[in-house]
Structures are given as structure tokens and as C-alpha cells.
Image (cartoon, rainbow, N blue to C red; front, side, top):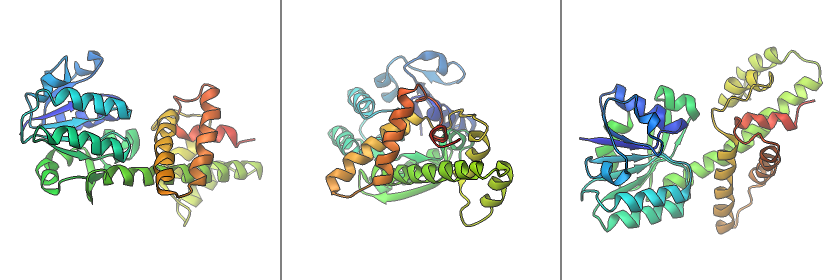
Length: 280
């Protein structure tokens, strides 16, 4: 089975490398061609050219309009019976729209957003939440297992993206809690490394504290997940929450905080840059 990868950004590049390492990558496309040069596979100047030559198309881009644009492009040439797996974070509505476009071409679309950051993409340890046809998922699973450690079928098309929205809301709350707690610890004159070490082993321990606590308290905000991208995701969450008439106050507060940081020029930093607003 031939697998093509579209999108070699911070997340997509790590995924493509793991696919190549597993001997499963057949073709790549990226808007800027420089990132394709390391791969000893077919490279294409147009996404529709790639889609015509593979059985499974993996997409990893940043925005809803990018996903729809790519789906419209590959729909011109993609073979009936192919599978398109979107690994991006977009809205459930966008996933359903993409699925409808491809259904007309007898192509199955899976919305399969991932969580785990750049580290997870690099190490092939991402968590993947999948919406769509379960038989298509099983067909694509050998390729997906090269990039994700946990792959869970959630339900119908759009349910993967709805699950990712829940994940992003939770990430906002964790970010708020960890940055606030470490700023508090700092105000108490505590040795931050010791605080992080002991709390990480207790009931309040979490991935974000363990992997970002030491760096944020040294004013290092190298992105594992860019703040501006999380802001984009939380805006999607706000729209979905409004449609369901449910309050997400932590996410709302995080959007406001992120906008302040973005206005100050920190949008390309890691989401742990929220610590900038809380520290002494």
C-alpha cells in the first residue's frame, strides 16, 4: 500500500520521518520544497499529483481553510477506494465538509487529530483520536502505527476533532494551573527544581509540568506546541462550545492571555510562555 504525506511542518516532518523509517512512505508534498529533500521517495509539486499515485493520503496542516483547499485539490485526481487521513486540528464541521467532498469521489475521509506535541511526532508516540469509517481505519492502521502509539476510534466523522477540542481545552487548564502554581512557588522563595521534582511524583504530577516546568522557569520557551496555534485551536473550541451552549471559562481566559502574549510578540513561543504573565 502506497502512503503519501502532505505537510511537513513541525508535526508533519516528524511523522514523515517515522513513516520513512518504517519503510512505509512512498511520496511527499510540502508547499516549500526544501523540506522534502531529505526523503528518498517521490516528491511532488502539487498535492493532486501526489494523490493520484498513492492509496493513503495523510494531511497535516495548520488551518481549516488549508484542509479544505487540499481536499478540493486532491479530489480532482484521487482514485476511488483511497483513504484520506487528516491529522490536522480543525473543527468538526470542517471534517464533515471534507468527508462530503471526498465521498463524491468514492474516497473515505478520516479525521484523526493527534496529541503529544513535537516530541510525540518525533518519537512516534502520539495519541490519535479518529472519527469516520472503522474499516478504513483498520486498513490505514499499519501506516498510522508508525506515527502514533495510541490510536482510538471515537465514532462518526467529526468525533475525532471534537475529542481533540476537549484535549485542547484540558491543555489550556493544565497550562493555567502549572504556570500559576510555579509562579506561586517562586514567590515563596522555593527552589523551583525541587518543587517540580517532588510534585511530578504526586497526585498533581502531569506531562506538562514534567516536560515544561524546568524550561519555563528558566525563561526558555522553545516551542513544542506554538502558543499561536493553541490560540487558533481554542477559538475553534469557543465556536463549538457556543453551538452547544456550554461554558468553557478556563479556555476563554487562556484565549485572552494568549492574545496579550501574541500582541507582545510571543506567538511563536511554546504555550508555556503563559508563565511570562504570572511570574514575579
